[in-house]
Length: 626
Image 1 (cartoon, helix red, strand yellow):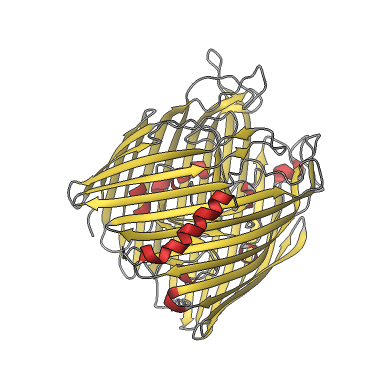
Image 2: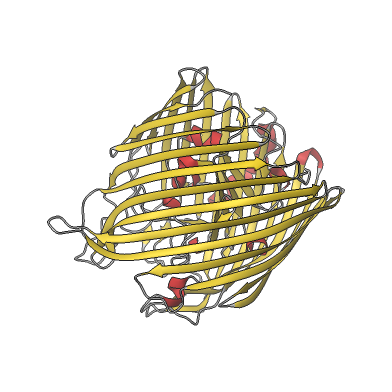
């Protein structure tokens, strides 16, 4: 049996208050949109109803992915509550995400429960994870180091690849679009009570845009002057399956491979072309000897490989470098139902990072062993969650983190959630050992966070409002001579408001975020805003069906940000509008069309790096009706 626990700007402050006060009245006229039984596992490492999570969380399912017609993970995630992004020039270019103003390497990324990311750079390659292979995404905002260890200071994003049940069903999709976009995907999957399997292939290629408007003469932006289109290609395959041997023993396995070719503006020193590979292999064995006990053993391997080249007209393509990292993980977790609505979980994690590179590193591998324990329970109208974890890192020794959450249910589905948690991040290999810039004396970064939230989930609507503060100590950064040091501190304060409903036949989703990410280091940049974080972001999605037609729009807005720590290089805010329409030719065939950034807004999220202007797309999808 699987256990489930039942269930600051003045403008932004004014807007948040007005919307919050108006939610109950608007919701009274709404029709059903929310699945109250929607489950999330990332927040607690166990199945919990989303509405019962004591930490802010969000789930994006396959239906929403298809409805929004997003063609990349960035398109799907931008503007979501607590998230902001930076991109180096369009499709396939380096993309980083910040959750609640924390650094981009303070975000833990999992694929089917397996930790992914580059051990050298300390980042996950969001731009190379193919959206056609994704079934659902879970986003948890706030520290989860007490369950996952290093990196989970800002939050956790877990990506689940496609899953298939029921009768064998094929699927197919082809699409074209601006910048000579060509894409196609196909898959098949199905199963019964005993076993299931699935396989998907996907292909995407675009000529791209001119990624960078920098100039080699002025040493700005990308330190190169290459006014050409920078293309991108991604090929991926996803295989998965599972089998139930007995009523108590289940086995499942998955494999994702994505190979990408990326052109960018660069030099002979760093290259201007890259061939990247992302691979994730995992298996999980679950044993349920009694209704009160469940044991799961999981093992996996994640690859992040990049071969870099320099190509120039009239000259042979020159090889530059290789960065190849491997991350092996294994875990065992046991969940004990102590009594009705009381669950105790305990487990152990093991991780080993290894590097093969043309760049020499003084240390090229390390392992980490961890033990954790968690309690979840409910007493009357109160909900409780507490967890503690100890990580024994080969380089940095023992590090203990914890979290404590408390919730109180009021009348009419109104809930108060509070939590406090600590987090940490071990430095990446680049920060420690990269030639001429690494600092081997660096230690782990540490954080303390507090969150207070109100939420109301009803049959016809839901809304959430959270305020938080995170303090990060021993933050790794650069001094005035561009040396990596560990004397920085940061304070991140913010608020988030979300609201979903169906009003007069319209599906409405709104998300507003404000973050004040301040440098609190005792230096010349004291109290300056951390670089490349937009303080205010908003996203509004509106969709409606008219018989066989369905139309929708997505409005995204982000306030100004600064591109440097001294706050002297300002990047203006922006707002974009995306429109979409689809027509159900019959229950199995759907034609979709979209227009992104319809007002052709010119903006940058990193100085000198372009973002696409107005774009169009058309696709045809086949998926047999249930």
